Image 1 (tube, rainbow, N blue to C red):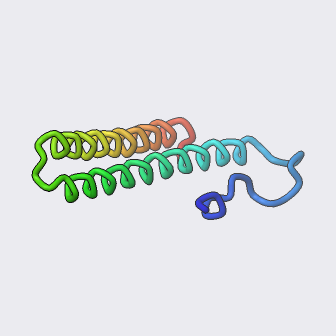
Image 2 (image 1 turned 180 degrees about the vertical axis):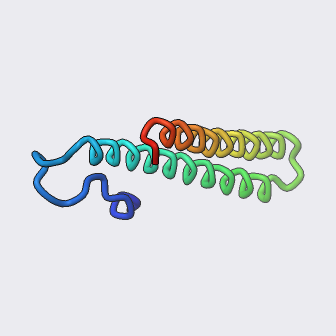
Length: 96
């Protein structure tokens, strides 16, 4: 499971968390979402590759497999781009 790799909040008393820990929580949530989106895109690339390999030259199935791979790559690019843009804006807002 992915969530144990990204602890959402630091341990301790939840009533004593400061603005920094809330900002860290938001950052961790963004990291989890972009990680999940990237994993889904990679799974779809693999599905498209399997479809392509099992198409056996059928033009309709080959075209569908290529579209699956294309849209998965576009999704991966969008996911990574969003992560980088959010990280850039985040660094400007928080100064870190």
